[in-house]
Length: 269
Image 1 (cartoon, rainbow, N blue to C red):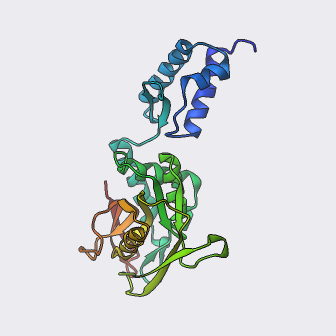
Image 2 (cartoon, rainbow, N blue to C red; image 1 turned 90 degrees about the vertical axis):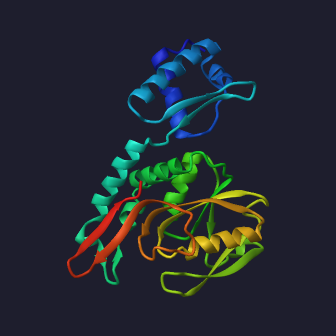
Image 3 (cartoon, one colour; image 1 turned 45 degrees about the vertical axis):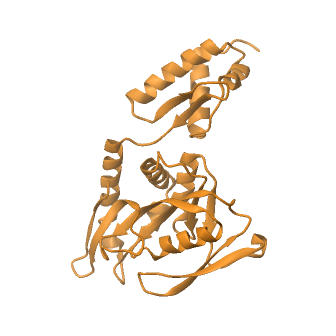
């Protein structure tokens, strides 16, 4: 194999790391890829690390020891999260987004990859110090941002359904009460989906009364597992006392006025 130039190595290493956030790669992996010494790869990583730091596009982290390596951490700084949530508020605070019933149309944001990816990075940043095994969500609107959060954290994602499928095998069903309209709904999850004793992070697009989050916590108890964090894109200020209060949100929704066509929304960071 011919000698690979430094700029080519740096480009390829950067591509590999950024496409696999929080996945650890050994230096030996890159040495074999480029047929070069570890000292050469270390120098390349120092350059990449400095670039990422200077332009605030995440960090390159190194783990020492025999089982160590290097990984890309794309988490946002507090200032970046503040700027991003302000941008989200500007997107959402538009009269044409108000639909009958005082709801806000957000599907276009949730299903735009560039936006949902940044939402996932921001939500993952809120739980950067929490040890988790799975990211969990409920169908369907929370799926895009939960998937992006799982990708950032390099963890598998689980979708809780409201109806079981034949391909799920044996499932556990649970009834829960939604505090937004006090309706009884059902959630279910395959017994194969999660290992006993797991720690899960629940991600959703919206919270009003906290009924869904409470339902997820109850469901996880059936799996002898624990919800160690709840993160949502948007939460309402009312009711102030929710059935589940231990959560973090990127945005607070105070009011939607259908008459004046105004949305009172602000960052939760």
